[in-house]
Picture 1 (cartoon, rainbow, N blue to C red):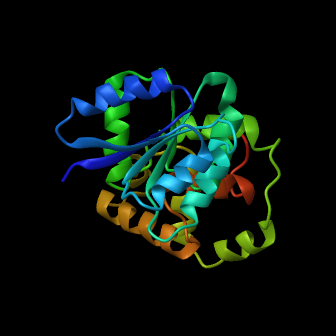
Picture 2: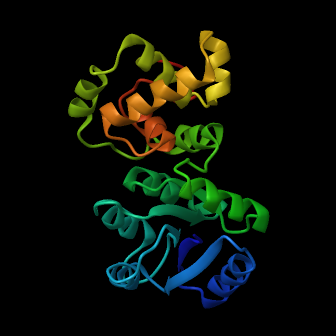
Picture 3: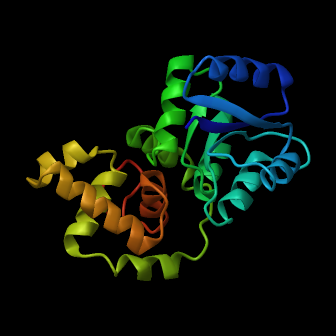
Length: 224
């Protein structure tokens, strides 16, 4: 079954370019488009979508708020934020809102297609180290809410799960974590899954965000 993709961007030309790239793929189908966040929410009510490519700066309702509302629904589509270098703060907010990752608008077609497939399979498409650099820059500027309950939630983790969470937030892959802790990669994957379940997080990107918000990892990637 083809991956059902929705394009949300107020630039028609950009949507056309993305649609042409996706249409050439046998495993992808553009099933909907929208020019702003309000229209996107309306379209999603009547259209089954797997992955949303979401711009951040749009009229009526921006991509960050649209992402937040989409991710509040039961079984929502995965959201991939599209940004430019000078809009990193929006990407950060998008990750906090529930997006599974972010990419630059001028990303090579091959990387965009790989990202869509990765998001659809349940992975976060942002390299953890890239996410960490983003958070290093913007975490001090963006106030977090509900920090005390979040800290309490961390208490539900075992010592090993907490250790794995710190390494995820520092940008290590499952393979690298396995080597560091002398575990099998399958065991690390199991720990990551338990962390996501216990903390009610969607993916590794959200693990990184929470680690920064609670002070488990400091700016610069070091453990607190």
